[in-house]
Image (cartoon, rainbow, N blue to C red; front, side, top):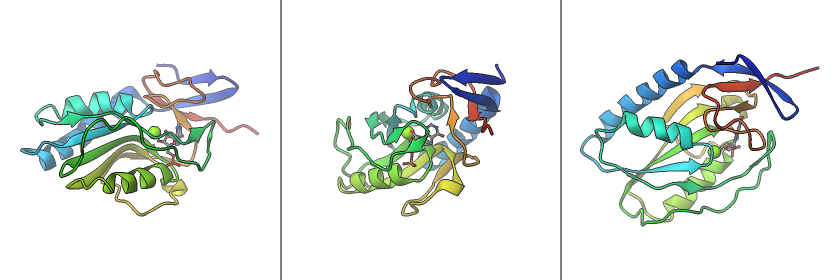
Length: 183
Ligand code: IMP
Ligand code: MG
């Protein structure tokens, strides 16, 4: 695994290795399995960023009979959150009375997830929980939701890899890389 790389104009350094990520995803899976055994949750991975996390976590909870529906709600451009949140798309079934688990790659300001949870609550699910691989506690500005399952708390710097991109690139990296600030 490369320890540094350049994407477009920016330099990134390895921050979380593939085994570190997988160990943590396995731990999250154990906790979720315990809490949802005998239930049939509907898992909602948020595209695009959560696709890798979802693929790994879903296989860690293979004892649970769950339904999966990929949704999309993008608000991110470049390395700064735009502050605008797009509408929810891709939800292809009723969530009324269902136990929902949202899968996110990263919670930054929290705006995206706050908005998403509000939108989903209108549809009357039985419960909503959130699993996010990464959390940037220093950036968190919206706090009207619970952070039920968090993989790693990370510093407030931009990261790519394991599903996350910088301007389209980096999603297929096995590790998670953080931006090297210059100057
Ligand atoms: P928030 O609404 O500010 O919490 O931003 C959340 C969304 O922005 C996440 O779902 C990511 O898709 C994206 N995002 C936030 N921080 C990063 C980052 O460091 N790298 C890549 N994408 C990020
Ligand atoms: Mg995302």
